[in-house]
Length: 379
Image (tube, rainbow, N blue to C red; front, top):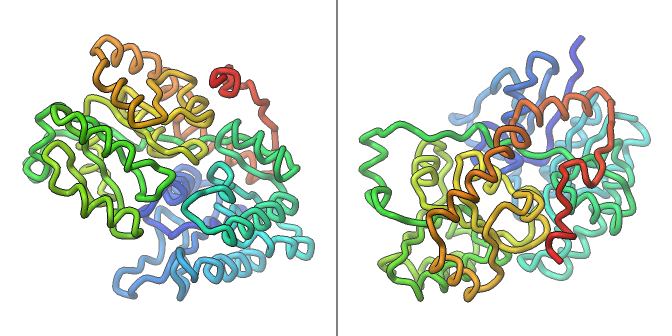
């Protein structure tokens, strides 16, 4: 009999939202021969629902996965999972306070925290920050195994939440350089020019305003940003104020990987502006696409790139990097990152590590397994 594994905390499958959904999709695709998967999905019109995806059973709930309905969505998902499956993978513990219920069920409960210090993000209020700290603290203490995607996050879980965790990365080799196709080429005429690209949600700690301000001062350089501009006041204001700047192209969020990879793969370099994240999926995907990386200078990003990037932390420092960059420097960054794409960020490796956790085989990875100490490098 296959073990039944439930994945909770995502918007559902197929992956049309973010990193957790991409993780769920690849776990299902790679491991469906070994486990019976159940994936919970957000409120969706009946005509658009699918009964299964790559062998996984999809269960649709009458709630949205974000906003004020998010706790309800997670609570119902988890309650159903505790009753019906053997292993629960909870991605992003919004309702971590519910997890003490596992004392009754004694399931193999895996909690992936998904980002660095969710309780410190500027995008949420003080009340929400306190709530997330409490939720993550309780989740960490009642999980069978805590999962961090970055050794910096692993240290934070130990220091703040007082629990150990296992480091399991994200994969990025589901991306690829698409062939020229007329219906794609005609959509993005700028792709024949030299441009820098960034993909990020429109929230303040992703520093889209820093990139835009820097490129507004460099009219000879072109920037393309793909983001969900409409979901926050921050994003709406940025879009309205900058949509008509000649050298800045603001595109809406896109989940057709062929279109997204076409735009990313033809860029001069990828700018990663996230300041609060663990191993950001967008950064890993850019590495796997073979792009040189220009990254916001925080320990998590240094750890993800093993220090093999060009770093900035302000409008001025980003301008300095862009204006003084040479092709030789870009090639050096690309070559240094290539081994990470070929070894560290493959889904086959990631899924093998998750399979071991599903089976209860926990091997705690040391801080220095990657051979790169981001805290030392950042000093």
